[in-house]
Image (cartoon, rainbow, N blue to C red):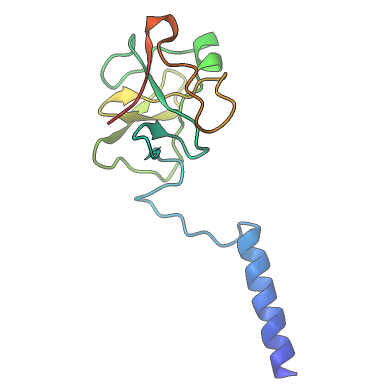
Length: 131
């Protein structure tokens, strides 16, 4: 009987983990933070390429409305904190966005899978980020 209770308890624990009941997220390393792909470019948590916009100024995004629809910002989890070269900017609508060395980071809507870089050079204003 004792082993059955142990098995049931372990099963419940594993099911809770799979459903997100238990979280290992910390305030210092949120899972929404950019990382580097094997080729050195920055990618978001979904594996898609991240871009900067030449018309943004240091610490400020000017990509709003339709621009933000085509170039979704890499938003920040509520408990995330800046770390090293990764900073957080507040957008005009009040949402928080990741930035690299003060430059806000964006996805491109036409990048449909990890590894796509179709936004590189669009309009002469968009660049992949390669630290």
